[in-house]
Length: 187
Ligand code: HQG
Image (tube, rainbow, N blue to C red; front, side, top):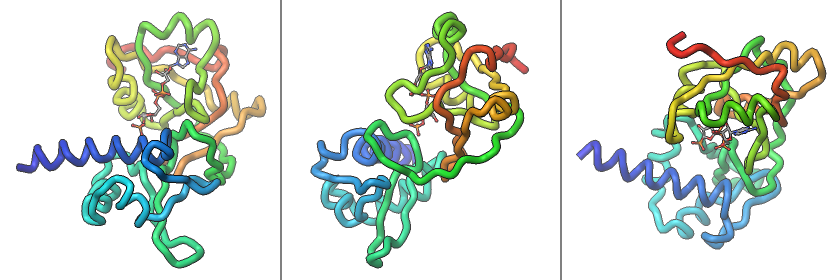
């Protein structure tokens, strides 16, 4: 029973990610410029109950979604990071930890060595302070996981700007190859 519920929640979380990060129009939704949309509108667009939405928001391993009361007093929701549609999350630049990690696959390493880390379809390159989290990010993809270390201290010193999302993901525009190292497997 629990496993089925869990699977349904993951499926719903993916639909909510699609609606709130990548393709709101496909669900008839429009995000405001900061990425917020009324909870009521999400419930009717995705045909889900408030209980389902709350379960995804509360049970989410990465706290992908934030719910709060908007200026007009109604409840609103947005994804905390990971958008491909243009939104301004109002993130404030922050000094990063000395070292950050990025999980990818060994197949990408030659290209990353040549050109550094790029943000792909997202607004930023996503980095983690925790190598285990980086490992999980890399393990989403087929192939062998590779963990890269990022000399964030040197990047910050050289003027690169870092942000931290509401759910603790470190974000930056790009990571030039000279700040990257490969973390040996099993360390
Ligand atoms: C790779 C998930 C070749 C990069 C995760 C990654 C994360 C390059 C892929 C969040 C490259 C982009 C973000 C280069 C970067 N050559 N490959 N020069 N530069 N790449 O999905 O970091 O579940 O946009 O290594 O947990 O994998 O959505 O980024 O493999 O936090 O909440 O290009 O997405 O969170 O892929 O994942 P993505 P990501 P959610």
